[in-house]
Image (cartoon, helix red, strand yellow):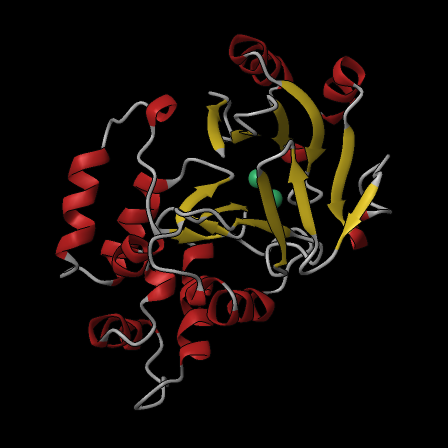
Length: 263
Ligand SMILES: [Zn+2]
Ligand SMILES: [Zn+2]
């Protein structure tokens, strides 16, 4: 399986993706907002885009569908409950559905509500597992819930699905927010040396050659996976003095999400 991350260079800092079968050259375009860059990358590599998949219904993920499908005749896939929000879906996806790309690639759809209520992530069952996570999980951060989402659902998606994936899972998010997110982690957990080291390492990186993290690394540097950290909890108590003595993970997650909204 080949994963090509495409940096759009737009103001929203979107990443688009092509997933290709090395044997057949068939490719899946994920959230191809910058359809020109995606098409050019496919042409350069000799791939044929046969499917387009939207992780969710927001315009910065669906805005390239029309032009991409007009140019390739690709089928459109998205969450089955997005049918009234995304025009022209050919295949509605639910949890556990398998998306085949060419002869060698199989991706499992995960139903991951929170950022919106009709959001899918894709998990590859390859030797090195990969997660295409749209706006649910970002490098060192979590999606917001301002436009059709719910923080409690996002917590359950993190705790019951994402956190349980293999540690070596490679993380491919829908936006490049890593530097700002690491600053939030450090604001919440100033003694997180790993986050500080990573911020020093990636500050000023060219997003066209972005660092790809793993879930193991996210668990060290993403405050939304560090819900039991004593320093996260101590710092949270400064903002929320009524926080219980031993707050549960869900409470910590929701308070962090609330602080991130205004940060
Ligand atoms: Zn979104
Ligand atoms: Zn987005």
